[in-house]
Length: 102
Image 1 (tube, rainbow, N blue to C red):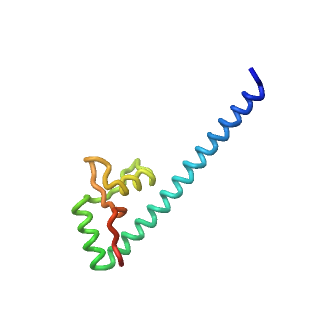
Image 2: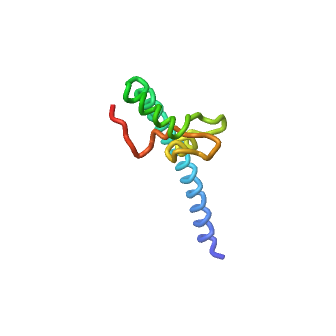
Image 3: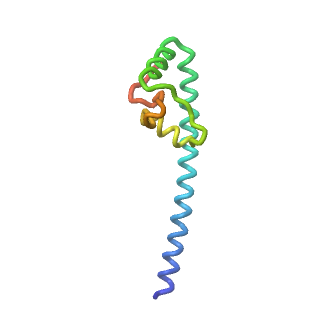
């Protein structure tokens, strides 16, 4: 077996593992940032009559959005964006296709 080829393959695997870990970290940071922005949007919506009505409409339609104890920011964000995470709980779904203008 060609030792150079094996060394190159091992180096490629190490690089891929590093990139995968780095990508996961970047994804987690991005999810945290998006979630923070989403929470800020909810606070802003709660301060106007139109926004409060929109929040109530979405809560009625999708259910209350509560973070589970073992849920990461990325998991919560995916659930909110998808409008639900199964029958066990509803989601407010502020990331729905409809938009609210303040």
